[in-house]
Length: 459
Image 1 (cartoon, rainbow, N blue to C red):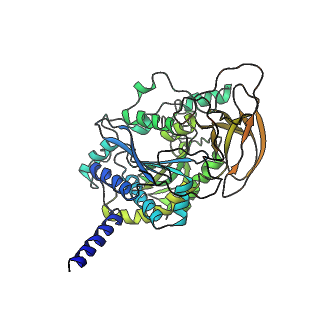
Image 2: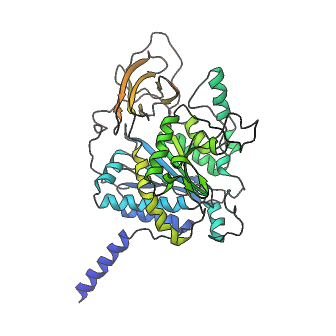
Image 3: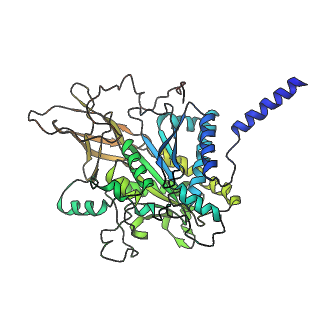
């Protein structure tokens, strides 16, 4: 009898370990427990880290998924999801907790699609950028007498109007000449932003993110940049005017991928609004200054869209399961979009990495730079492109490239040193200090598309 009881308790423990996240709202302590529960369940493919603290001292925790957590593998792209930037818009927070549990369980179940995604992608999930605002909103719950309680952080600042304004700088450069990427920040930028914004900016600069989505509520539409129109300061900001980026076709495609994989976003009619295909240019909806998705595009290598996911900003608990089922496939498909376009290494003639090299695509006025380990990622639609790699002190190299649907095209550049002395390279995205590092293409990185075994060391 004792053996049967022991076996029963063992099965019960196993069931508790793999039980899905319950469809309920998670306060801050519950959120932290859930993240650690997922990490303890999948310690070899996850890592938890904090990017900083909120005004009230709550950690901004990120859950990372990778077959080598904590390590950037050359040629493996980095993707992020950010939820709950507005504290009263809570669905994204719950969806990202559900997604975390789903990725862990499906990897354990040897779901080939999820295993391939985690083996070939480094995924970072920030469920709540504004935990203080959430706690204020959750105190009222779904029956909010005051609609905007918790939207802002504890200092009553809207975090999506708090990033340095780089659009004005870019619009000037577009007319008069100047950088089209990695636009510099003001010297005193840290004193001008909130703690949560500062933490996220340092996070963006510490990882060479390629793709991102910011999860909001209050509408059902996939919103792509630019959010700010060129005439924002001189005209009514609520006057609609389309403000496309140089990568407009790509952004429209990314937005459509989410919309059409979503249960009902693509239908267009939602929440009393109509958006064809369930997508919109941000400024075409309404102009927004100092937003996060424009900042991603103009200051880093990252392409971010904003996902408005529910008419009700604080859905009732009984609605959460339907929302998860409506978003699950879209969340996975969007992560998979990072594997398109071109990627490769930029090396010198001695096969040393050229950190900070610039990758330019003819006809698209937006460049990207190679990361700390010399690898670069450039999202592109299928087609034929002329691509040039440049680095100070080296002769440029140009290649004609065909991009196919499905998988990225591998394009390595080997630059020869120029004779004339020049200034040193710029600091690379990814938190490194630049410099040169021996390329490890053959021994560090798997061949494109090859499978690796999960890391079996401590998480």
